[in-house]
Amino acid sequence: MAIHRIPFLAAAFMLSVAANLLAGDNAIVASSKIVTAPAEEKSWCERLWEYPTIYKNDDSAFFNEFRFVGRAHFDEYTIDSDAGADQDWIVRRLRIGAKARFFHNLDLHVELDFNPQSQFVGNPAYQRLTDAYLAWKFSDAAKLTVGKQSAKFTLDGSTSSNELITIDRNNLANNLWFSTEYIPGVTLGGKLKEWQYNAGVFSGGTADKEFGEFDAGTFELFSLGYDFGKLLNVKKALLRADYVHNEPDADSTFTRPFENIGALVFQLDAGRWGFSAELAGGTGFGTQSDVWGLTAMPYYNVTKQLQAVFRYNYLASEDPRGVRLARYDTFVSGQRGDEYHEFYGGLNYYICGHRLKVQTGVSYVSLNDTTVENGEYHAWQWTTGLRISF
Image 1 (cartoon, one colour):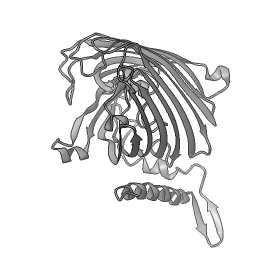
Image 2 (spheres, helix red, strand yellow):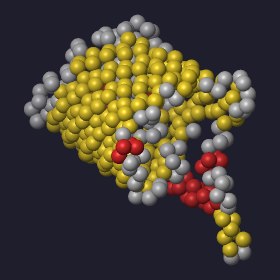
Image 3 (cartoon, one colour):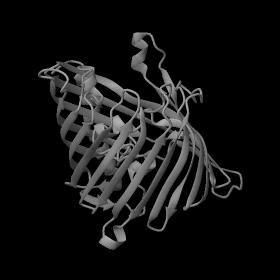
Image 4 (spheres, one colour):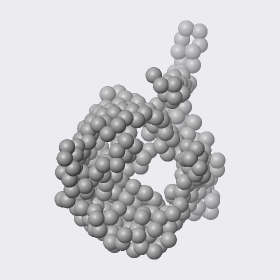
């Protein structure tokens, strides 16, 4: 075992042990008897995650809450491909910020992204401003958000990195979704009974670490879904359609070079098991070919804390070299192709729900490039991640 793996794996192990020890707070050992704590007592998870909230007053007419927010995601990966091999650990995400609530309905959210590993190559640790917005909630049916925020479309693109049940987003999102994610814009969204919607206008300008230059067009996002959960007697059965129209502009570095992007997303949660799927495509501009693909992702909750997940991902482009590889594959190859397959199997251990979990997954990827003789890429990858968020 490589020496650099020891601190990472040891930390994950110690967190698991600490979690089980802390869980023992729900019982008090007295002599040979075990006295169970009152049912209404908060779990150690709930108590621990209250600490970032440093002020809360629901009775105030002006200032109601202030809390720190952030995430710390760490990955260790091993990849072996016909283009080369690589193994290392990285700080996948490290963010810190704050949320404040005023007038019971107005939220101010500011969050910064850091990468301490970038210091070793001469770049500052500060990477960018992620969230920087004001959001006014009129009701459950209408919430207006203004500022730099997540552009939510496609299955994984609309899912927070804190709540992914695979080690990373699927490659369909990596190709079609705008992976910079946080983009200045104005959105209106909400839920009305079983219906949910989200609509917005975003800047497609030249990106920088903050708000960009607002100099390269805009894009519009529309999303509409209906939850059939009550009808099917399950927790969730959401069918949603997403559409993005992106003004073609080669200088728009907040976005991908697609003029139109559409996705049909389905998410089923039946309690012990679930299934997510999507069919998505985009019409490219400039040198970017049209691309389409599909994702199928069943999962099974083995216990309350242990979850097994499988994913199949397929992408194809109309012209050669229209499909790009996913994150860790690009560490060993810059190849592009026109047909992509991924098979992923993983386990998730939820120590404290999505707020503290360990994830591991093995994937097999193949990519075909018809412009090159024997232009095929094949790779096995094993990645383990520790996810902390608050």
